[in-house]
Image (cartoon, rainbow, N blue to C red; front, side):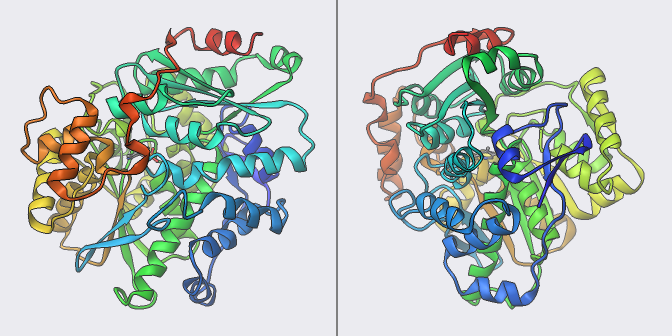
Length: 495
Ligand SMILES: *Cc1c(COP(=O)(O)O)cnc(C)c1O
């Protein structure tokens, strides 16, 4: 299988090259040339195997230039019981009709681990197989969770270095602590004076700038661990299949019945993976896109207008504080029957005017597939409290946004088919806000104290990776302006 750019069809690469490169030179994103389709026989066979078996099967459909044994080795190294103690992606039942896909049992307590525990292995396998001589420098912008998950995945990985840019004021204190205490000689964490969009645009600008000569001379090659990298998306397709097949195995749904999915959304990577799974034959009905007060995607799905000329809010679901959702570009490519000219035109309108509109078939397809709504801060907190009071289950603020939007969806549409709510983070990653939502007094408590209070209040243990974080040594203190990111990269690489 070959990969093409959403803005230039003539550019065709193997999956190894697409993963090593991260983003196409003209700014487009790599997408698979065709989407594989799984019939009921394949689904039945996959229902019988464990998460790793499902991952191996699906990855091999996409990453055809990897040797089978390399994929087997990568999957075995990523989804260990050590990294995911209670299981890789268990599905909890909140009540009959609503299931929660818990994607946060990995080492950094957010769903980014699902892909970022695997990506470094895919990257090193590609480096070896292609005889790559240069050191791969992973540039990553984070809205909070990708940064730590990428650092955790790439720390100490031979042939790679990783630089993470996070918005100085835009991440939770737990997220920040996780990053600035990161060990590993090949890791670098830098705060940017700006928000996530500034950090992500800065990274994309570095990819687009003409640094290649200097990087070449230094023996470096840039790549990305953001969900613009195809290697981030393909592992995410797996858990939609896995969750559906688990529901069948547990008798919670009938074979091949349709389910809806609700995805707390920011950069549009996670919900795009659900869309791909649907296209690949998984019986998914509606893709319900949940946003926080940064509700640009809600407006887009309802009106066809994507407009970033609006206020930016800092919320208690910081990993969704995003106005420029990169992966929407991949969806637009599919909805336009893979028209790179159409996509390139929209993206240049976005760059120039901060706005574009889709209509006609693209818009009607968008509306058929997706439903969008958002939760404000009070609604998010209320969803945490209500879910705990009614079901004894604690949602993190991102998942709570999803729960609120799900309730809006079924109340407004009357559609109550079995639904999978994708849970993207552990509530312990946002202990102060969760405590506050539950009605506890958290003022004046530090992170460790909040964790303990939350643990006592809920009877749930603090996840091991978060224990003792406040006492860890701070190893990264750099701050740079949003126009200084390129310089920061060059000086870290001593170029
Ligand atoms: C990254 C993240 C999201 C948003 O996911 P996208 O793939 O960027 O849409 C939602 N919740 C949490 C906790 C996250 O870390």
